[in-house]
Amino acid sequence: MLTYDPNDPNQFTDGVPFEHLARLREEAPICPTLSGSWYLSRFGDVEASLKDVGSFRADLGRLSGVDGIEEVPSEQLFLSEILDPR
Image (tube, rainbow, N blue to C red; front, top):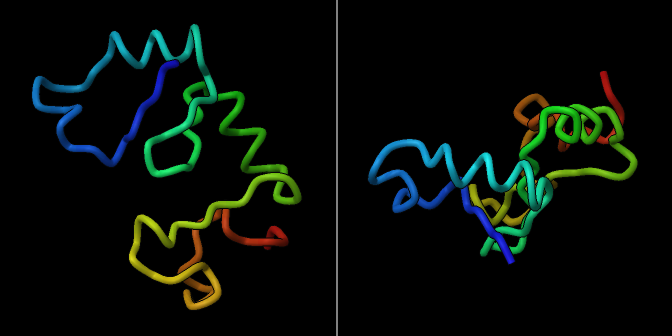
């Protein structure tokens, strides 16, 4: 199974892993990361997820160190964290 973690600096020691990213887009456009989140590699999937706030939502607590999005001021939320588009 293919995985990818965009937050792992070891993946970039030899530059951007273009071949691996191309393989992800072809074979596993939505793949799990080691942290338990999902990586979307196709523009259309990313665009659709940003527009469908009822189905897709980002909890960046694991990446930011903040315990869940409830503690982040509303003006600092990422687009994918906003429940209702403004």
